Length: 209
View 1 (spheres, rainbow, N blue to C red):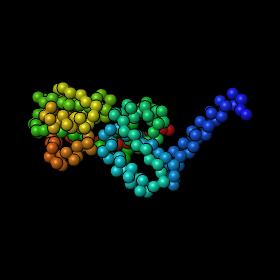
View 2 (cartoon, helix red, strand yellow; view 1 turned 180 degrees about the vertical axis):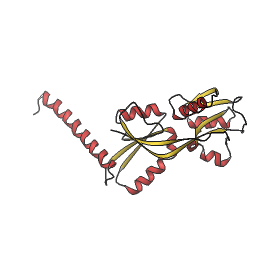
View 3 (cartoon, helix red, strand yellow; view 1 turned 90 degrees about the horizontal axis):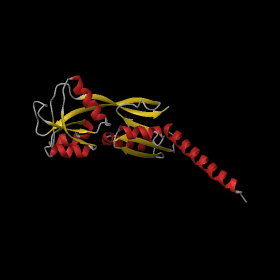
View 4 (cartoon, rainbow, N blue to C red; view 1 turned 120 degrees about the vertical axis):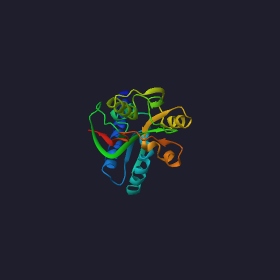
């Protein structure tokens, strides 16, 4: 019969064994073995294409259990990476807050979208993402380089909500081309022909060192 101290030791030993089992599963998945589990975190903009990549991965590795976590913005994803709650992260700007390995793997074009089309941006209200988002930081850097101060009237934390606001005529926006491909093709929104756009960045896949 275990003593009180033995019961405490048994509980912690079981937690250690469970953690080692999870670590072994994650490493097996990263090495592309037959089994295991891998957790992938993405910023909300990446949800438009990452599921297609994961579907192809699952075809090649059907025994690997894949978990996908979508975060509202980059800051939340960095916290998940810091706490090791995700094995891989897909984001535009690699984090400086955590020691990590980042590999670029795809282009990330960002464009201005509005309805109806306009010739000049200055008189028109802008609908923008929150300050922690990648689209917002790229937009601010682009406008600063062109010495332009946008008239920001609405700030939203969701790409989908911004798209609905644009269709409602509330203003124009600066979003990833990944998020508006279907709407542009259907003619529900118009991509503005502005010099210097699209602004092309890169998507990175990031893992902790």
